[in-house]
Structure formats: C-alpha cells, structure tokens
Length: 416
Ligand SMILES: CC(C)(COP(=O)(O)OP(=O)(O)OC[C@H]1O[C@@H](n2cnc3c(N)ncnc32)[C@H](O)[C@@H]1OP(=O)(O)O)[C@@H](O)C(=O)NCCC(=O)NCCS
Image (cartoon, rainbow, N blue to C red; front, top):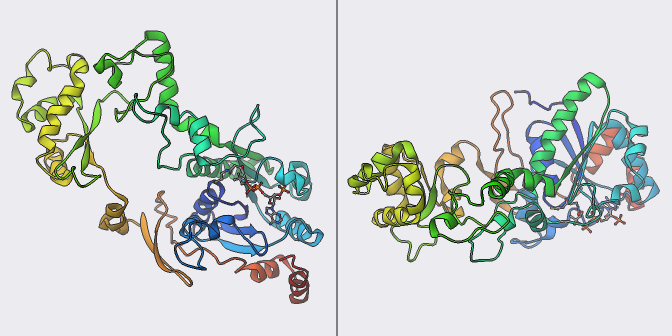
C-alpha cells in the first residue's frame, strides 16, 4: 500500500531527541528520511545509556526507525559539496543544532534557498527570538521555561519535571505538523519556507490551560477546582501547583487501591463527574449524599472535595485498580488505572494496535518500541529498525549520482 508522504525526501540533520522524533514520524508516514551523521561518531545518543555493549542504545534505536543513515563531514569542502547535492535533491531539511551552527557550517537560509528554492528548512531551537535565543536547551530546561515545571507537583513541594518528554518529543510533534503544512502550501506556491518550533513555545502550547488559569486567578483571586480552594490555603499571584487535580471542570484525584503499601502503582485516577454523582454514591455506599444538600450539587461539593475523595478511597482500597475499573466503568464513571511501564509493555491490546512494537536489530537483538501513535487507514505504518551508523552511505551517494570511484575517494579522505 502507498504511504501518505511517498516521494518526499528529507535531509535529516537532527540529533538527540527533539529532531529525531519529528523525522521518525515523517518516515512512518512514508518519507525517505536520510539521516546525516558525523563520520566516525554519529548521533551522540547511539552511545548514551547503553544497555548492550557496542550496540546502538535504545535511546537511539527508539527514535530513528525507518530512516537511512549516511556519514558525512560537513566541515570539509568535499563534505560541503555532498551536502549541497543533498540539498538540491531533497524537499525538506530538518535540523536541531545549537543556534547558529548551520550558519557556521555555511548553510544559512539564503544559501539553502540559492541551492533549492523549494526546500523547506525546519528547525527546533530552545527559544524563539528574544533574550535566550542563543541558548542551548535540553528537555527539562524547556519544561521549566515553558510553564510546565512551575505548575507540576504539590503546593508544598518544589517545581517538578514530568516523565513525558513534552520538551523534546512534544516539540518534534509540533515541528512535524509545520513541515507537512509547509509541504502542502508549497504545492500551491512552489516555494519552500522556514519552519521554526521553539521548545519553550511547544511546552507552553501544551500548558495552555495554565495560562488560562493565570488569567482567571488575576480576575477572581481563587480557582475553585484547585485543592488550595478546598484546603483553604491562600492563592498567590501565580498559578500554583495543583497536585493531581484535573485540569478541567471535572474534579479528579489519584486514589489508593489494594496493594498500595507495596506496589507503587496500585492507584487509580478517579473523576467525580457531575452527571454520574448518583451512581458514584451508590457504588461507594453513601446513597444519602445523593440528596444531602451539602453533597448533591457540584458547587456544594467543591469545598468538601478532598474529604469526598478520601471516602471514595476507602472503597478503592478494597480492590485492585483493575477491579475498581471494572465496577466504575459499568456505571460510566470516568477513571483510569495508574499503569506502570511494565504493565504497558505487556499489554496485549497495545501490541495488537501497533502502539507497542517488537523490533529486531542485527546487533542488539529484539527490543520493544513505541510505534506510530497516529493511525491512518490509507497509510499504515510498518516499523523497521534504526540504521547502523553510515549503513546507507554508499547507497544514497550512488542515488545522488556519485560514482564508485568518487565514493571510494571520499572514504579515503574521511569525508564519509
Ligand atoms: C541539543 C544541543 C544542546 C546539543 O549541543 P551540542 O552537542 O553541543 O551540539 P551542537 O548542536 O552545538 O553541534 C555541535 C557541532 O557539531 C557540528 N556538526 C554536526 N554535524 C556535523 C557533521 N555531520 N559534520 C561536521 N560537523 C558537524 C555542528 O556544525 C556544530 O559545530 P559548531 O559548534 O562548530 O558550529 C544543541 O544542539 C541544541 O541546543 N539544539 C537545539 C535545541 C534542541 O533540539 N534541544 C533538544 C535536544 S533533544
């Protein structure tokens, strides 16, 4: 079956996580992604957090499926020549070098336009134009600068970063959307364009509800769905950390389930959704709350939420998170188990949908990865292993028109 991005050729100048997540998605949609890596070393993540000696790390393999790898020293004149040829023959260049690195290499926007006016140049940077635009940035810096850390955690604790890589993978996802949008616009204008996603901006976009709350706080001085309202704590002038409260209008919290004393993930997320208040009361054995004026309406419940959750928890503690799920789902009460990575890795339904995939690798053997979370009926994803360093150098150079002799000479001169 054909793929959505068949015929699109990507010059993948990305490394670490943010850029590679973007180009991996494009590869899954069918683009020919040519990853250009430094001769001899390659993407630094190949060797980071290694679990199998001398094998590409899971960090690298899980971010670079379905790509081809070529090695090229773009600081040598002959390497620059190969890069020029690549630029002429590709549709998109994706890069996430430190600010200014591409220009120092001699490939700023103007030069790329001269070589190929149809080329889309897509970049991840830590910050957009402004006081921090020259800074190097990694995941957690973006989480802190984008508003995530200040709004994550508990009120009496320090700011917290999350396990979700919203700074890196979140930015890669935003960039991928910018690229396909630019490709679409190019079909009408015939021109390429610059696509920039700053990690701070991508994180802030994902923290949109917290900027909403900042303005609500400034207008009203309180936010009733925050645990601070229930506990009577004072609100300051900035959005506080809300613990496990839900970000929307339906109050929720994480509750203990059977086994919580020894299992760190024996918990369930429970939402006291207003339309199912009566079934909630029946399930936990507090039928009197259905009509009690102190509990009968969402407004009346607001100042009592934490004690309500404590009562529900007495009930959830009597069963496992999966048993609680079964009972609550029968009554359409929104809830979700806290799943460990072990449980996710072993979950058959995620294997069946291709969201968790087993891949075979010639050096490391079989490993699990996260497949394409975006499922398309006319462009299915087949996850294939990440390339070895420079595995496709000869193949790609031959496709670009280089003769076997020329390729041998480039190798001799350590350009590739
Ligand atoms: C991630 C980051 C902090 C890593 O920094 P770093 O390891 O020092 O790497 P840089 O991006 O600065 O690149 C290092 C050098 O390698 C050079 N290089 C890269 N590929 C090359 C190649 N194939 N041949 C020759 N040189 C190459 C670059 O030209 C650059 O040289 P310069 O500093 O002399 O200009 C930085 O790239 C960054 O801030 N990127 C943007 C934000 C981002 O994506 N962060 C998230 C990462 S998950």
